[in-house]
Amino acid sequence: MAKNKKSLSYELIKGIVKENPLFVLVLGTCPALAVTTSAFNGLGMGIAFTFVLIMSNVVISALRKVIPDSVRIPAYITIIASLVTIVEFLLKAYTPELDQSLGIFIPLITVNCIILGRAEAFANRNGLMASIMDAIGMGLGFTLALLLMGGLREVFGFGTFFGINMPWISEGGLRPIGIFALPAGGFAIYGVLVALFNKMNHSWYSRKPDDTMDRRNYPGSISARTDAPFVSAEAASTGTESIAISKGSVPESMTEPGERSICPGERD
Image (cartoon, rainbow, N blue to C red; front, side, top):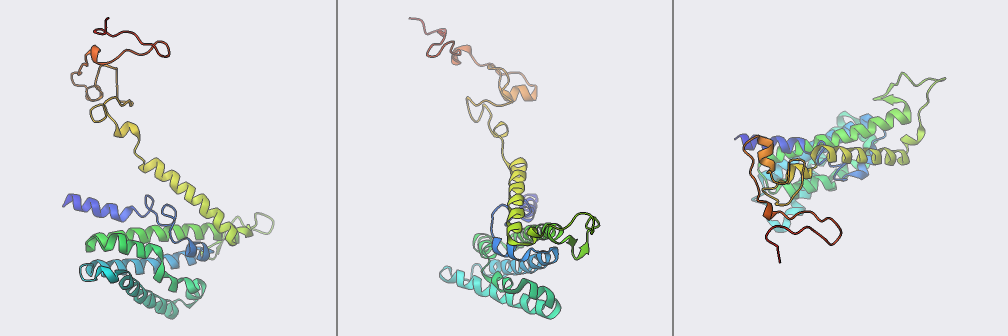
């Protein structure tokens, strides 16, 4: 049970930084660059995307043993298109301004590579709860990415955030930088955020050689834990009795290129 809970929590949080669909996997860049001219647009697109992703994962995971492999992709697209139609009608009914701002990119959620990818790579192979956690995590990561991009472009390009004027923007003071409201500014901010997330991934999740290599599993490896040449790293770190290695089994270092001292037992 504990292992299952740990697995579900990993599926939930992996999409935020480690496998962020926009900044790490570099998927869904077209709608991200097109609609993130404001924080409101980014948040609205993210919520619509997350709803479709969660519901499609639920349906596909529940029907994964029923849908034949030969027609699974058309079946996925049909399921996703039905959900997108529901979202589009809801937006037109309750938030017509947002629907007009997002435009064609709401129907294009149907063929979004993130949703189709999660359906094929995860929901089709995992149970219902794991698929729901995966969809929530990926949707949350994508929504936060869109909100971050939209917020930065709105602040720098228009001097507002969710339509509220920033206090440092004034007639005689700082002025908005219009290029950030244009596609060129979107690409610039996107590139900076991709580099930042890659740096975070490298710092937080990369496995360092010192953590993965030791003398027992990799004889001859050198790490911060391999104490003296004749004392095992494990013994040194735990404080237990050291395990000595016979001197005859370790050759002495070379003194000059192509030369080395003669070890005992190598006499002529």
